[in-house]
Amino acid sequence: SQQGEEDPQALSIQEGENATMNCSYKTSINNLQWYRQNSGRGLVHLILIRSNEREKHSGRLRVTLDTSKKSSSLLITASRAADTASYFCATDSGNTGKLIFGQGTTLQVKP
Amino acid sequence: GAGVSQSPSNKVTEKGKDVELRCDPISGHTALYWYRQSLGQGLEFLIYFQGNSAPDKSGLPSDRFSAERTGGSVSTLTIQRTQQEDSAVYLCASSFDRGRNNEQFFGPGTRLTVL
Image 1 (cartoon, rainbow over the protein chains, first blue to last red):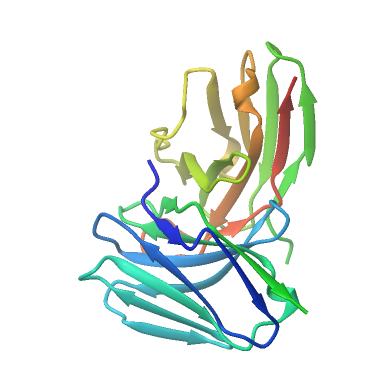
Image 2 (spheres, rainbow over the protein chains, first blue to last red):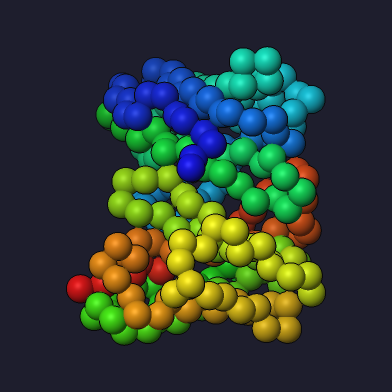
């Protein structure tokens, strides 16, 4: 079964607006990672936040983690049409690095 | 350096046939993972290799699925007697080491269609 659940399933915004995606999970984690996928093929790693971290930034990306609520959010600021993609959260809970993925949020940024 | 590569990029097969999917991880990466993604879904873990340790096969959906990793590098995922529900994109990933806080690098995937 999937650990992570993303919300919303789909998001459509105008270029320049901010996009926020949420992820909830069920078990304790070592870290939570966000990935991006274009056209249903290979995934690109965006950012990793460890269980003892609360917020992390990378360029236009901001990730928060609330372990008490077992949730994370990904914020993309000043979105661009090129940000159009599916975004997945993935949790690492064990000792192997095996990732459990959510169902993803499909983001469409309209020019 | 080169990323994770997978072959073939697309595979169409008839129900009941066997298929082999190949993954070349990034050189020096000791951990290798196989995932499956059905249409419009998230990724489902299949199997994990780390060095010479016994693989974690806990995600394999049936005994028709098997995987090998030869010489600690290239991996082959084999699906025997394919069924239509096996149709999916099969993604391979590698990371520098197992365990905590390691980014996984994904290949482009193999799109398998079982007719």
